[in-house]
Image (tube, rainbow, N blue to C red):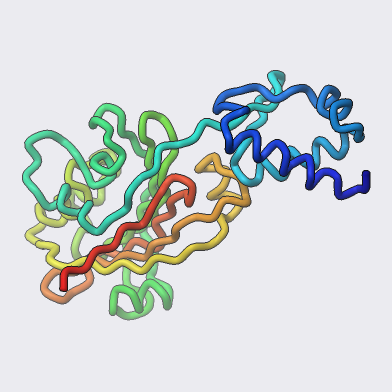
Length: 251
């Protein structure tokens, strides 16, 4: 067998995973056993498993071996998700908890707030001058302790400075950004999203627990009130193996 045997070995294991012979959570044989089975060196086995790891099909656990990765639930990402934020909050929820099908107690955020000056891109998205003071908020969203979304969402200081919205201790906030802005007398009435598909940065792959070969959705969002941009999210990052984009138009 040639050096490229690792590609055939990876394909063999990939097919066994996809057809269910190797079920989610199953432990793969040790490198030595796989090497003997395929009559190759352990170096080639490691290369084959590296491919599958980058594709998100397997994961390594220190001291335990290599396992078939659990198949994560798929999130349907539709613009209709914002109706959960805009509606009455009889029980605490956001568009994220609604899509994920989780309760408020199963939802948590990692958060980091800071004041920044708008660069050219952010100023263009807000339609303000470069250098405008902006509150940058970076979040990692967890559904039942699984990191499922990253977002960088920004608000204008002229709207939120010295208000509860600028206090990270108030996160997570039922109703999300729409509810937050409503407390300030700002009623979001339009939302624009632009979605790109790209490969994750090393940091995004690490935070989301995905292989570097799994694409992500990168969404840029603008929330508007009476034609004025009042919130910019740039980007919202979702793992491509856990999300399906749903668009709808009525003619």
